[in-house]
Amino acid sequence: MKKVIKLLIIDDDDFVSASLSDYLINKGFGVRTASNGKDGIASFEREQPSLVLLDQKLPDMEGVNVCQKILEINPNAKIIFITAYATVQYAVEAMQAGASHYLSKPFELDELSITIDMALKNVQMEGKLRVQDYEREKDRREKKLIGSSEVINRIKEQIELAAGSEATVLLTGETGVGKNVVAIAIHDLQAKRETYLTINCSAIPENLMEAEYFGHEKGVFTGAETRREGIFELSDGGTLVLDEIGDIPIHLQSKLLTALEDKTIRRIGSGRVIPVDVRVIATTNENLEEAIREKRFRQDLYYRLAVLNIHIPPLRDHPEDISEISDYFVKRFCRGPVRIPDSHIRKMMKYPWPGNVRELRNVIERAALLLQGDEIRPADLLLQDSLSSPLEKSSQKTMNIREIIPLEEVKRRHILSALRACSGNKSLTARSLGVSLSTLKRKLREMNIT
Ligand SMILES: Nc1ncnc2c1ncn2[C@@H]1O[C@H](COP(=O)(O)OP(=O)(O)OP(=O)(O)O)[C@@H](O)[C@H]1O
Ligand SMILES: [Mg+2]
Image (cartoon, rainbow, N blue to C red; front, side, top):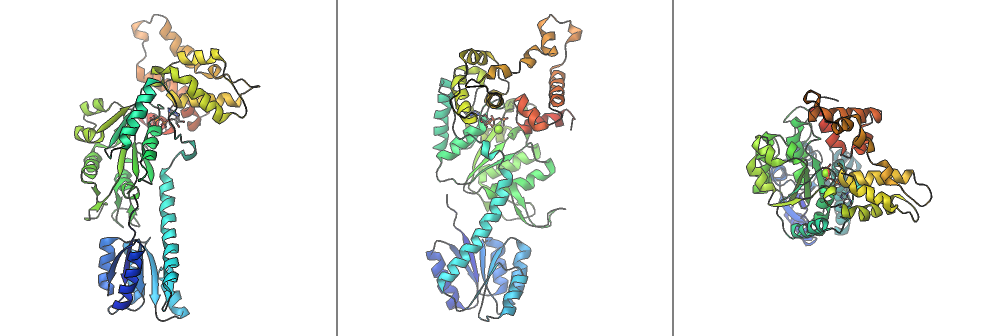
């Protein structure tokens, strides 16, 4: 969905104001006008336009002072100075006050148009830089859901269904089953939605989370030196993925619910309600029903999120896809014709894949590094260790009740030995364990290991 870009013209010359306004409305901009400094500042605060065309001389104030006031409200504001006094001194003054561009009367409308385009490009670039902060693993992103089993075909149908509606989607399933792949697939089918942003609810410190979601005004807390938009505003007109939604603290859950129901947000420290048009997709590998029973997750929010619930089963439930998915990754990671021996496919079909398709991808990627000739032998790399580790061996003989190790302790020891095996490299450990880095970090936090 294309957003109308808002411009504000502050000029006391009604004729100039009206003709600029006509010209810019014709170009598809949303235009507001003000004829003095005070009204201009008020209008800026209310409308939050992307760009201001500001006359140097106003009846009540100097343009330079209006410029300063506007930048106090929003330091990222783009201001084009317009003046009849074409002297170098004014240009310097305007730029020193923070204007981004300068035009002197009389100017051609084409010249104005080019200047506006330049200023807006800057706005876009600054926005993109922030947006990139949220985009992780961009080049590793899969756009296509591979597989042709009944399980995968059903999910493909559900993706189509979801793309045809605007309802919130909840994607559930174990780690690595492809929840984010499905989220992208839904987004890609919705041509009108442009931005695609992901925020990981477990990766952000609790005290900063509200600001990340909804933004804040300048000076409302220590560290809030400037006004900042939250991710809901940044993804206006697009798709927002709330990853690991089970980790969102309870006190924020009611605010999120309000945002979803009213389609509006309010920045911290502001009374202004801002409408946002965002398609929300939430993902979790947690059992939210259990979290609801334990009062860690609000039931009303759950119902709101799960208007459409797509559950992606683990890979061990559709082993018939293993061959096709493996071939897909072999093509991606190997050059030339490379084949996987049938015996390896058979072994892989019996393996439980705790890290699901992510683990399969990693196994193929590592096997590709060890490639000899035209054969790739991924089954050699399955976590045989985990199947025949001391922990596993102890489960094969009959245990004495006193020997039973609590499940959480087994997990803890397994993670610690994996960390040791990877010399403390967390990314490698996560990959080897077949979980995402954020999942590993969360587990380490839960276990008080940092
Ligand atoms: N059906 C699939 N087809 C192709 N690739 C897949 C599929 N499912 C998963 N993948 C691969 O596995 C990786 C992990 O998938 P994804 O990030 O979507 O998992 P997830 O379910 O979101 O896991 P987590 O809960 O750990 O975040 C993807 O980057 C992709 O390479
Ligand atoms: Mg994910």
